[in-house]
Length: 194
Image (cartoon, rainbow, N blue to C red):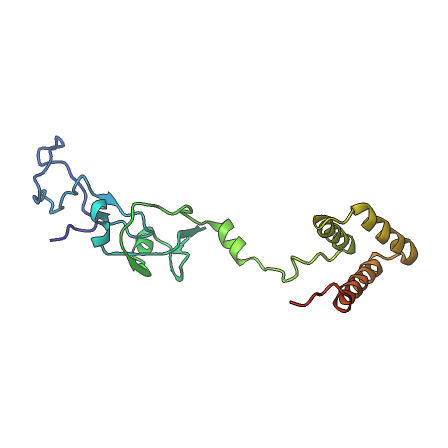
């Protein structure tokens, strides 16, 4: 026999907190919980189980935390099943089957900020600096990381900026110059046979 999923302990009939015997039922039909059993930490399970026999339990749970945003409640893994009442929310069936666990997730609940952050539009060019000055700064950092002196780089782009007056032209000219140098490496003795 398997204990009821949400079995809980009740005071004895005398009201003094006496324990009921194993397998005994209180006057209102609730089976007492075994003191060694713990509540499952999987999202939405709420089942008590024996942690020494966790692999023998069946747990129907949600794989992601709940979202409480304004008056709506739902599981972030099941966004199409929303509820406005707590009891309705707790009746939303789990979307995964596994075994009960004593380890809880790091993120227990999600709120409006999480929902807005996940739904925020993402720029496809976030990684690309639009400003030519930022492109030159990134290029300087990359060249410094391979051993090029930053003063040599600053002197080169400074001359180009003074000549052309536009950093966009400087960036374009630098790109062409680096491309030419890399292509000349192919034709010189830099590439040795395998």
